[in-house]
Image 1 (tube, rainbow, N blue to C red):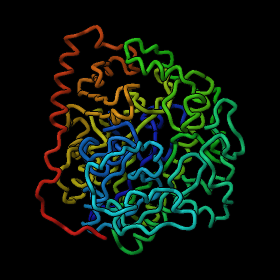
Image 2: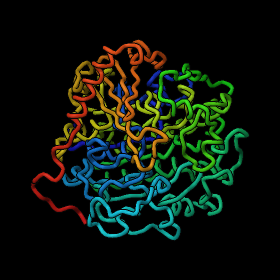
Image 3: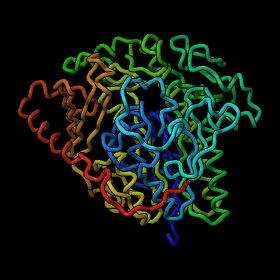
Image 4: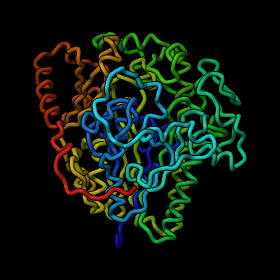
Length: 525
């Protein structure tokens, strides 16, 4: 490339690694993502730092572990002044923008916040309202005023909610396109209006409006507009196209709702796994039907008790993914039309996965299995040859990788590894393990479920999980990709080796930079 490359960062929400054509799925149709993968490096062994939205999105932004940047669950916001790689790109002269789901603040998940009658641990000093910019109520009559620098993004247009509900900047955009308020700002409950709905679970339905008003089209159109403007202005751009789908409720609009017949969907190999050696709370999750589990909250861990419903969920999810694929194709076509395809680095990934029936479980939440923890990952650098790598990689590696290959100065405290050596040689390796964290406050879980989980994915294919209760699980993914043969209960020697590895990984993950002296630079404001 002869000039500073543009960056297009495409991120979906709750998309499993296996749910793309380039990862071997023979049912879901993703021709544009497959073509993108053919131009770049596919990472077959990519894992999250935390299989929840906010923690892992904050890790992608900062290149730091959740326990270090502080967002360990969906109940707290990333500090507004946290060092992010996007801010480094902006300081380097890039025009930066975010379209779609941010979820760096807990506006979407305020139901996860538990109030305590105690003084705060720290006063950030940002002033009231700093962490409320993703509260949907603020957008009813037009968007609120945003800071000039929102975690490094100079321009932000949010689509805040999931399912058929339209909020954030997306709401005013949809109203401007002729949408009816009563069809757009709807409850995330079984009372939500729709054209058709599953008889088994209210969260599988066709929205009451056409696809042109849906969040996937909003992200697609606004991303294209931004790219056109940036190219016209002669500025290198860094933009996030952040699609809220295929996260539940599973509501692909229009023609995308019927793309797949549920009867044709195959159930996961492990759907009848009794989890005999797993912690007891996971077997309790298995017994909870989706309708029961989500009565009190639309998002909750559940079991795959109704196999026909699982097929409906898979079919609807595939429709949503195919709509996103169509949008990705349109964005890439716009970049090509602007003559920027050879000067644009593209990343495609997801913030985490979904169980989708594996191990008899649905959705996410303290389920430390491949379904929630592995994600699709493609990096296209036009200056490098395409390839495919089985080397370990993580969401935490994306920030240092982009700064490295674009020659942007990194910020202090980066814990991820640059994947540039793997982009040059897919057989290269930059890490021997990936550490995955899951946390909730002990005062919130109150012993009903463990409040802390650590999983270690090692280069030799082992997947080892320890709970704060002392319980553990071990799988050999190289021999047992479906996680059907739990090993730690019968092999104390092998478990001891994993415990030793985990201690080392935890020591490596400790932060030695927060609050350390640095050269101070002004933040846009």
